[in-house]
Image (cartoon, rainbow, N blue to C red; front, side, top):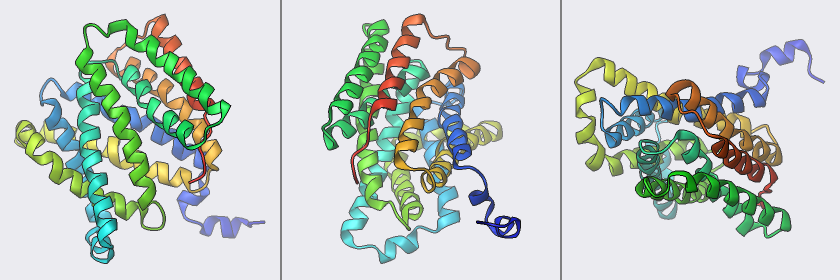
Length: 288
C-alpha cells in the first residue's frame, strides 16, 4: 500500500487517474479538427493539414530527438517508420479533405469501421461479427443521407478509415519503450511526404501571425495532446477498458461538431452514430 509520501513522490502523470487522460484525448481528438474546419476559409485544406503535421513534427523532434532512434534502428525498422509516416500524411490529408465536405460526426463514425473490421478479422468471434454488423448498419444510415451530393467526401472518409487501419498495424510494430520516439520519427517522414502538396497552400499562414498561431494550435490540439494522452491512458488501462471507452469518441465528435461548428445532427444521424458507438463497445480486440 502506498503512503502519502510515496504517492507524492510519483510523477504527476502517474498520480492522475488514467480515465482523465482518455477524456482529454477524446476532447482534443476532435476539437483540433473542428478548429481546423474554421481555418479552411482562410487557408486551403491541404495547407491546414501541412500546418498540423509540421507543428507536431517540430514539437516531437525537439522533445524526443528521433534521429537518435533512427541511427540505432535496423533497416526493416526504418522502413516501418517511413511507412508509418506516409500513412500519417495520407490519413491526415484524407481526414481534413473529408471534414471539409461532411459533418465531423459522420467522418468520425465512419473512421471506426476500420478498427472494428480489423478486430473481427483478427478474432473471428460471433461477438465481433455482430459488432461489425451493428457499426456497418450505423454507417449505412449516415451515408444514405447525403451520398448522392457528396460522393467524393464519402470516398475520402472511407479512405481515411482504411488508412486508420494501416496506422494501427504500423503503429503497433513500433509500440513499446521507443514508441513515442518512433512516432516522432514517423511524423518527420510524414512532413517530408506532405510538403510537396501542402506547403504551397500553407504559405498564406506563414506570413500571417494570427493564421500561423491558429495553425500551430490546431497541430498541438490534433496531433500532440491526443497522442501523448493516449499513451498515458493505455499504459495503465486494461485493453478491454480502453476499447470500451473508445465507444465514446463518436459522441465526442457529435458534441464538438454541435458546439464549435454548429452542425446539428438529425434523428437519423443520431441513430447511425448510436449504432456505431454500440459496435465499438461490443467489439473485442484479439491478442497482439
